[in-house]
Length: 334
Image (cartoon, rainbow, N blue to C red; front, side):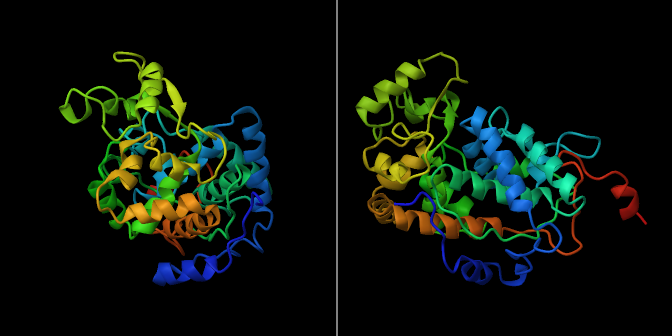
């Protein structure tokens, strides 16, 4: 099967989802920056040549941006006199990465189309390109977001799904963003590539939930492998593959891993191992048919990309993704 899959009718699906936020459009930059997608693609491909992890990292940046105050580029803002960065929140610190690549993309886009393309849209475009470059689907990215002038440190701590969340908690976090169970299972499939630190799953390996024993939903062979990688009292920053089979390829092996009790995070494995959960049949469906997974992932990415975007005259187009534009606060005070 082709590594790319053009998802038909995704624009129509997205417009149904966003309702009043339908100002986003796949053709938003057609006249003002027609080459934006190719510019982003060139930078991401160049980065991938030296860093195979970067595609998974860029997808994750878009996800972590959208779940906090919506898809507004707020995760990119660094500490300043007016900003407490989301990057220092527990789900992000020493975890999210790829900011240098986003800066390189922004520089390239500004050289071609100054003051036109938002950082929030750059994250959305880079996520789609990253998935496709790694063997996954493509979709029509809806554009027209503007950038936030604030960050939400507390929201990053409370709203982002955590790898140790149980199914009830993670379902509530997705529901709070307008995403349903299918979105939850499809977007979790983003863990089909990339790496994770021991700190994010070591609680399953030795003393799960204070029981003094490993998580019983972990395949014992896989458990032994993970214990070798992450020994008790070892280096919590050690990396391991999210998908032990095809760690750098975007495919549906993630769901087969769950069926084999080889989900790395508790939040992953509970999609399949929670008795009576409605997620089980969706995992089975995606595991048996990669096309079905790709179609649903593309649709869910559009849904996620439409969480509370800033449009019209709200927000701004940052000239530097790390910083609010100079003079903005004084303008707002007039």
